[in-house]
Image (cartoon, rainbow, N blue to C red; front, side):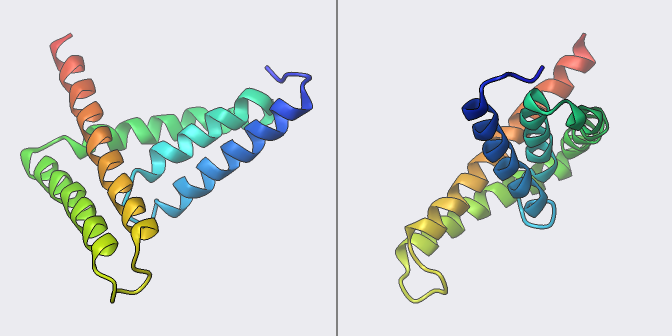
Length: 134
């Protein structure tokens, strides 16, 4: 439900728009793009009811993708390795000065992406395991 507070509305619009834009970028870059698109849409829908119609289809696809990511030991292993590779690349980018865009701003972004990937992988694994048990 939309609130009457214009400051809150603008804040939610900016934050939701940024999360949505990062999610769209991560659809082609390494990272949890679909889940961030969903988070951005949910944020925007809290203040802009017209966005609500996009939430359920994206939620369905994001949950399916989360389940698929832990559907086999090979996929889990690949995802863990990708997360660790991002974290390693982040440390390298932060420490080695001769690399393009070298520095901790790039390195910390890569490390954060790796940690988010591993966190979402763990969340997906627990969610699928709980579904199968219950």
